Image 1 (spheres, helix red, strand yellow):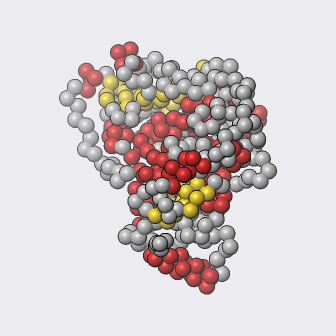
Image 2 (cartoon, helix red, strand yellow):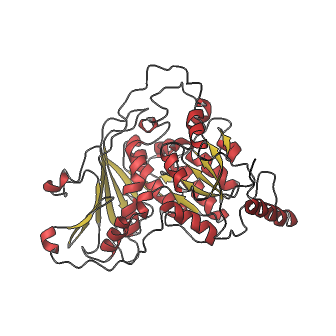
Image 3 (cartoon, one colour):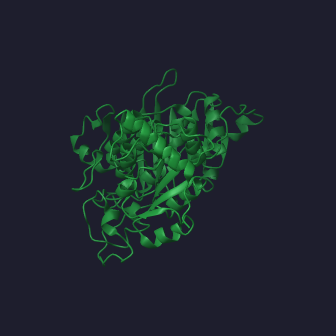
Length: 433
């Protein structure tokens, strides 16, 4: 016997009645304006249900999962076993049309983040989207502005932000323990890309809706080198290490130093630019302006085994990825799980600041509770949109092959018009923001 969620059904009825009476009801959906009781479960649609999508699905499983979407029938079928009442979709454009959704979780590959997220935003749904927020810089700005205009509760999937270690590192930097920070190094030992296009292009497996997987990008023959796990190697679908980990590791200096938009982005070292594949290693330097009484900041990104020269040799093997804040009194070194002050001998007996940033209730729970209580998350799109733009601009500068003088207001590299092809999104017919 099919069960009915009477509280959710009543909520939908009341919202429709209110919107109809004010002339605001649209056939394409309604905005979740009515406040939801903290004791009431949200109706969620989840787009992408395996891998990171599976983790996110489990992260929001305390709520009503009423719709699941995935282009892979096998993965969708496996996830549906845990949520037998959920309606199943392969096309997320159909899912966001549902009129009973409060919010949507987007866990697709990068190239479909923006169109899925914007579809949910246009329908008035609160959104949780995996990082990076979008595939291109222009998409990040459009999505951020749309969510702000609709006053929706948003969260990007930088789950490390919710861990206690990042909070303690932020407090340490802000306490002035090493003095005003003018230099930051961020590095990640992951490597993607450095490949040539696959020569073998077999037919897509029958359980994969490959054209829907491609979504807005120009059609290319199927290859197992793209789907399901290796799409980050290719410009068409992702942005390599920079796009995958930039939002995680740059999150810490963005948070601690109040960074937003860079003034310039310069590729310092890297392999020859490949037209199709992302760089397996790269070094990029960003310049950020002063913020209030905080000085300008130079942030240098390193990936693919590159590390900053300032990192002491004894620590290199133990800190394959990390963030180094450099001040006149010393340095703060941190990664996902650890943080310490350098040189260690200079900080013997140092008393750390009393914790002032409350510990998180959980990255997914922050989003859920903010929807119910009318609050705000820590990684809402007004924060994570500029963070995403910054990470993606490193790839833009690398592909353009020169230092970019950046006008964040107009989304233009004023000295490099050829960079625009990598900044702006371009979709095939039938797909749009």
